[in-house]
Image (cartoon, rainbow, N blue to C red; front, side, top):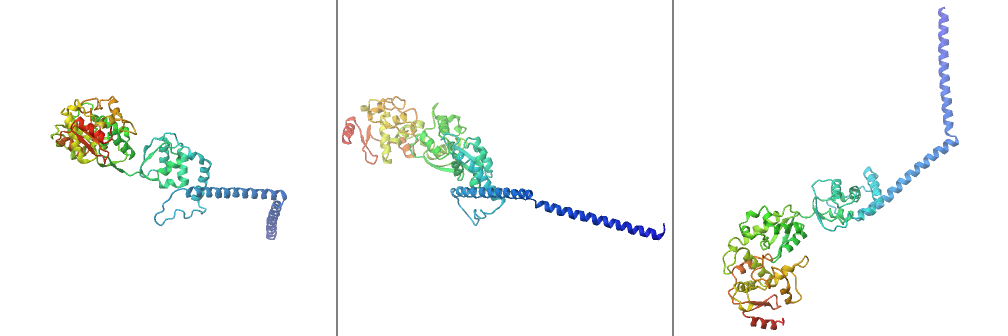
Length: 441
């Protein structure tokens, strides 16, 4: 083939390839036009419009849920007491469409579906029990422990309520008193204010051990029965050997009489009885001491001295009468009161102590005659001498009066009804005359 022929063949080949490319592009363009026209077909348009309508419905439902749950959440938050400190506004950005707010609305809607369950208590047990929240403990852990200890029925629901209401952020670490008959709302509200770490407790002169136990329990210091068990079994205490005066107690004696009345600062939810009883005994040692339990004109010592002091404490109202009242009982114990017919103290508080019951620890009879009808070793109308043990916990003045009573010949006394005062007599005849004068007969 000549050079000219080869050149002509190359041009024909290039021309053929160019035509093929143009044909391909035209086919593609034609196809694109066909597909675009397909979109304009009625069936395709209906399908497309249906999808748009469905999408609009979904968006409408979400907006409705947002509006309803937002209103419900706002109602919940308005019912929660809040205190705002500093420059941070907790309501800032509340209506913004943020992931946090979206989550909050979803949670609020979930809570609304189970809202009635929030008002159902875990049980009917109204007894208050201690509950402790540790520093930094997450709310979900608190909810789990509350459920395991029987304070809430559902840990997940309680945690959900804490999150939606915002109360979870304000739970305090510390000590709380809860009962199983509280509903979830009440439990959540109770966790907003922890108890103080210590309680200031005042024990008046003349309280019996049960009254002290009730007051300690009322101040969340220790359960009453746990305290009383320790008082009634002092030898079981690890501190028993630390006090010399306790070593002289007769077998089976309690600490009644040695719980010195005063104002104390006790820890909340004390872990052991020793933490509570030691301050009483230490105060007794400081205020009374060994010297206060021995010597004196009465001749009494140790528990016998405290025994009489407790009776004087319960009988006397006016401080200046304590030595006089003590003198009457000492004269009777010394059997120098012939008109009494023996060493009978005939002390009303001893019988009141024997008949005391919860809520009425110092029983009062309808008539004086009832005192002689109560069968008890503590009844000093029926039994001579001192009762088996102290009936109360006397103060320092009563102890000093029992140790060094006034020197009198009095064998009787009775209340005049005037500011707790008493009138005293040496003989039964004088006493009966006083009974008539002051309206007892």
